[in-house]
Structure formats: C-alpha cells, structure tokens
Image (cartoon, rainbow, N blue to C red; front, side):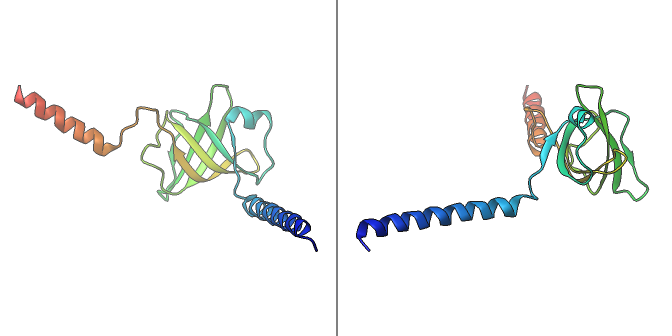
Length: 148
C-alpha cells in the first residue's frame, strides 16, 4: 500500500473512532438530560407520565405544606400565566427555599398532574450574598457606627 493511501486510511479510522466515541457518550447520557418547562408549558402540553424534566417557577404564597414525617413537603409552583403545578418533594430543601421565591424542581409528572420532585433547587436574585458575608457587613456597620 502506498504512503498516501495509508494516511487516508489512518485519517478515516481516526474519524470513525471519534464519531463512535461521541455516539457512545450521547447514548450514555440520554437519561441524564432533563428539559426545562414552566407551569404554563406543562398546562399547554403535558409531558408523558414518567418523563424526567425540570419545572421552574415561583412557589405560590400560602401553598407550602409539610407532611407529618417532617421531610415531605407539598407546594404549588406558578408562573406569569394562570397555570399552576402541584409539587411533592421528600427530602431536605435548600436554605433559600421559601414561599414567594423562585424554584427549579427536577422530577416527573405522575398520573393526576402531581409533579414528584427528586431534587429541589432554590433560585436567588442577582443580589444574593451568603449569610457569612451579610453577618460580616453587619458587624462592619456596627463597628463604624460605634466609632462615630
């Protein structure tokens, strides 16, 4: 075989190996993908029961209920539309999770319209400061006031 044909064969084998690696990675991650939907999207076109997706919106005020076991919570997520989705989560919620705040819940829609969340992520605004920084700023303000 000529050197030119050997190089061409080597390039084709490398391209096929790269394509195979990409396809294997996509196949392996297919169940890890979770699409983001708002309550309005869910109301307009409900996904099939059991399909994983992320539900994002605002926790409705007055909707948070804690179960007798202490770790199960039920709440309602709404958005700019009139659509609302009931959510149930069993576990420890983030510190920033509260009524009237943003939330992203990852899970599945059960028959009957209840969204069963596997994970809860609390959203914060762009002005978020960790509690340590807030305490530190308060101490600095108190110190500067006492120096006056």
